Structure formats: C-alpha cells, structure tokens
Length: 104
Image (cartoon, rainbow, N blue to C red; front, side):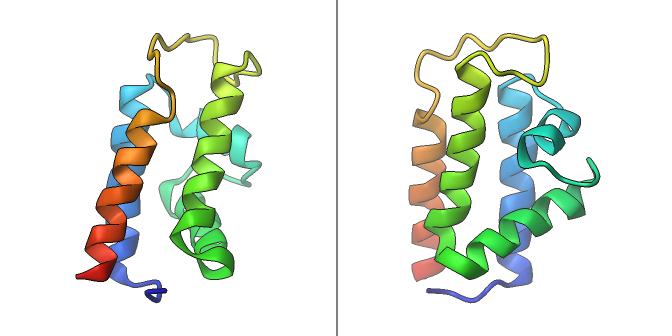
C-alpha cells in the first residue's frame, strides 16, 4: 500500500470536488454524511486520510460508496435529487484510476 502523500491528498481533493459537482451536492452534504465537524475540504479529506491509513485506498473509497448509497437510498442530507442510474459507476472508475496512479 502506498503511503499517504501530498499527491494522493491532491488527487482525493480533486476527486471530491468533481464528485460533489457531478452529484449536485455540497461540502455541507458530505460533512453530514461523514459526520465531520466542519464542511471545510481539509477536514473532509482528513477523514478519508484516516480511512486510507487504516485500510488503504479501498477503505477510503468504500466510505465514499457508503455516502453515495446513503444519498441514493433516500436518507439524503440535501433536498436535491440526483438522476444518475449507476451510483457506483463513477467511483469504481475513479478507484481504478487511483490504483493505477498509486502503482506508478
């Protein structure tokens, strides 16, 4: 497993911004789902960093999949509805890309 680095942190930050935009969610939505103390991006990334340190990239991505599942199951922290028919498809693709980046 690759150690947490500034490069991984930058990738995850970019991933979160794109992911939230795609699902029409806000950092505040993610804050509620992750049960974070703040909606600031460094705090949200730090939660994923802890998951990454405990279980690697798989644990961090699983956490995001669980959040996405929560949003799609109707336990939404936002009144906005996303219409994506494959809620895990994008995260699966991103996981593969991140695995490739970590192996290089």
